[in-house]
Length: 322
Image 1 (cartoon, rainbow, N blue to C red):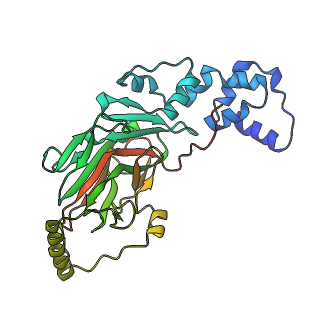
Image 2 (cartoon, one colour; image 1 turned 45 degrees about the vertical axis):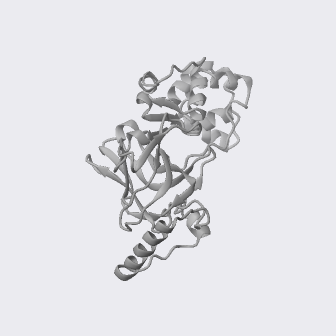
Image 3 (tube, one colour; image 1 turned 180 degrees about the vertical axis):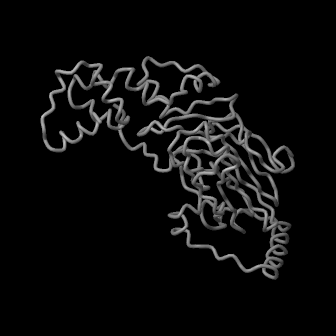
């Protein structure tokens, strides 16, 4: 009610004399807004600036279970104020749960963001050195990532308990990956991605299966083929031509706009959206994300998976901290 009243008075041009209010009262009012609004209000006056910097404001913007989450961090987190902690978590994902997940906050809303490490995912043949290898990369936030050596059956699943996520929030899931210069078979057939609830009440979820292309450039110019590779692919393509309709690939430019091809993330990795879902009150059990390419039967290599990230669908970091 207070927030609506203030918004009405400001909209009508009615002068509101906040200087007569105690700073604690102003802080309480600001805590009912959002982190973005709080930073805008801090520019109004020195009184507002002081109120915005109050721990009571940023305590409200932090998740209610932030202390429990920090206790699961693999490294101690030092901060001088709740505001300092908030913005640290928006810009520096922390590694939790023994290195199997990362946690961060979406800057404008304070909603929770998680990435599930590849080691925590269910990867078919992932523990077979002939098919997958676990390696360390300097630009990965996790100790190890999964490198695809050679498989004809590509299947990856990840799960997250919806109680760990922010309530009343629409999330999108993204598989975070990169491609080696020498790769093959990834652009022969589209992969399938999906998001669905497993158990619980079953809220709104994008349960449709969509096709994506594990091809960062939309062509095969960077692929290296041996004579054996060419024979295998020739046999596979002839069989596919006889048994199934040909796959019609959309144009690269149109598909990138629709999220069907990998997109650059800005951290040296790429991502593909797997689907979205609405997390009501965390009562929908687990949400499962899947990536599969098992229909073609062709051999694939040259893919590196860091993990699966869940973050608010319309997240935005394009504003300055206060």
